[in-house]
Image 1 (cartoon, protein in one colour):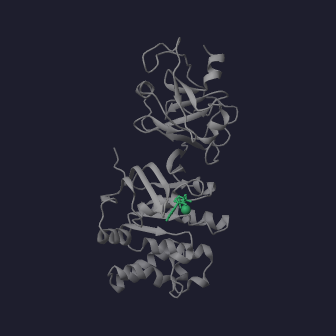
Image 2 (spheres, rainbow, N blue to C red; image 1 turned 120 degrees about the horizontal axis):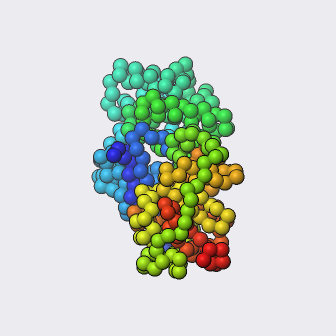
Image 3 (cartoon, rainbow, N blue to C red; image 1 turned 90 degrees about the horizontal axis):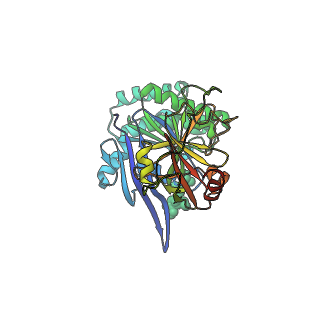
Length: 378
Ligand SMILES: Nc1ncnc2c1ncn2[C@@H]1O[C@H](COP(=O)(O)OP(=O)(O)O)[C@@H](O)[C@H]1O
Ligand SMILES: [Mg+2]
């Protein structure tokens, strides 16, 4: 199995201001493989910047684990933290003003982190030239930020972030201040760097169009990773259908499902924990495909069926980030204890009213609202 470059486990960040406490991250899990380019999306205030700041060594978690390569971010002392920030991580901010010094040329901005790191002049000049070429600004080396467009400034910012050969590039809404065409160019530039250098990139964005350009998009909700969208290898065909399903098996306490039902609690924000029996019988391995049927929700192991959305007349858009389900598959993360968070759309479509019946049907799990299920099945 490939070792992850980034691992967060049950990450918690609480900001204390006077007598107020804000829980910015509440048990966030994240794994990023080397060479991956992922996007983080989520409403304002969901904890994206907090997560990036922790991964960037700018902030420390209150509890939980955060690691990047061999660096344990909960254990670095100040000196190690400074080295980590300067040499291991590249950071691109949303405000290009924060990335660049206005009085220095593009080249001098890219030189600066190298000079501060003690690089010799010749090596520095060569690397700066290479980096400006990589971001498509070979001709702009002598221009100052004010002489560059917003998109060009962000390209220089990317080159600055790459100056000391980081192993991870973090970009917090790097396209937030750009028009959509320029934004696409910046993302294409990041994608190019990801592919050319094999560099792992974590990108925070509001823009779903941006999310469609990356390998994987994670939606953050209330300080947790809640769903995952993966680009399909092949677009949907309209013929695949579900495996035949029949109600077999028993509840968690061993009663027959034909005579008994079992319910679980679903909290206000859709978090629930699957019964042990269900996760033992349907091996989800960390994530599940979600299908919202007319009157219930189904959880399928990834790859158990060709495409869980294929059965629907129109696959429509993903529940969380709005990408077409013709081209993307959306799954939710399920932790080792069977805890998961239902997509908002599932909560809106199915009247769970705080609880659901769990049925293990062959190779998938169904969640039914209590009253509907009793009427329709039984
Ligand atoms: N320095 C801080 N002090 C107090 N609260 C903060 C601080 N930074 C962020 N927060 C709070 O933490 C939550 C998550 O913020 P943030 O990570 O910036 O979200 P996002 O980047 O997704 O918009 C918000 O409720 C925000 O108000
Ligand atoms: Mg933010």
